[in-house]
Image (cartoon, one colour):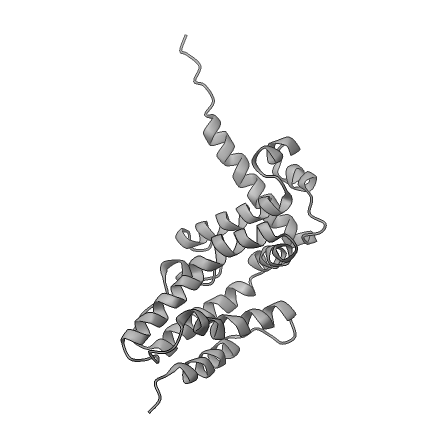
Length: 215
């Protein structure tokens, strides 16, 4: 009689984690962050509540991990999330450098607009942003793991533009990138006006006009 093969516990854990991630993202999108519970995530994922608490201390931590997983998959699996910049896609690979700073920034900001407008990403992004304001530890993790790596890409592209003479040498790239990202996030957070490609293009035109070398 052939020996029975032992179950692969690591594979089972991976399946459970993915099910929990998917359940958390789905529930936040469907019912919102406040109505999402550990019990609801467990039921949706088909696991016990204690399984979740063994890996995460709170629903905020579950959502953070799920969002990081989604962003990672989007970087290597086209279609895992529809966005192409910001937290995934083009942004994850680096801001393009065609030699035309305006065109490159417009390409990335347009992709960020698409990502922020994507229902699959909008709800968890808003939830993490809001929860990070009242939970300093989660907020710091959100910045460290999600925002800083992407902001570093803008800094790198702006420094390359400085070296090419397309941006003034006295410009601080870290401050300059906030001219690009800040207005986009402000409009997205307040929902006062539509977030469009045309608006992204206008931000780039206005910002780069102030960054360009002066005669």
